Amino acid sequence: MKAIKRIFAALVILLLVLVVGSYLLPGKAEVSRDITIDAPAEAIFPYVNSIQETEQWSPWLSRDPETQLSYSGPEAGVGNTLNWASDNPQVGTGSQQIIESVENQQVRTALDFGPMGTATASFILEAEGGATKVIWGFESDLGLNPMSRWMGLMMDKWVGGDYERGLINLKALIENHG
Image (cartoon, rainbow, N blue to C red; front, side):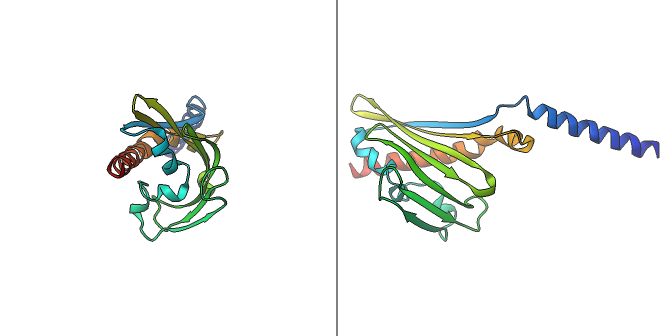
């Protein structure tokens, strides 16, 4: 009986350490990747300022070709919205809306993953001679949920590779059509 009490006490202490420790972790998850594309910003901007155009280079749609996509709002710029639904847990269900658009410079989107939370994503275009550096960023407020904070530590590993693949796809699309 004493052994069971000790095991229970150890588990309670471990749980408390994990919960308290989570509040020492970052409150935001951030991911950022960049690539230089041999083209001016004007050639790249249409592919990041329209969610419909991202279908051509998205790193996620290949995971589930059966993903249901629906669009609303304008075809580009602020208000351009995508809703998606997939049974594949790596794709899931959610929405994305362009909330800021500065021609040939920046696009910001709001992401809603339903019960998985919300985030913002951004594309920043920086001229580098005749080329353009494209920075794709992601930021999510993890709130006070201890589980979210521990999961936030893995966000770069989970999303970073997808961002890299997407940027490589975008680069190939632009440079091969240019």
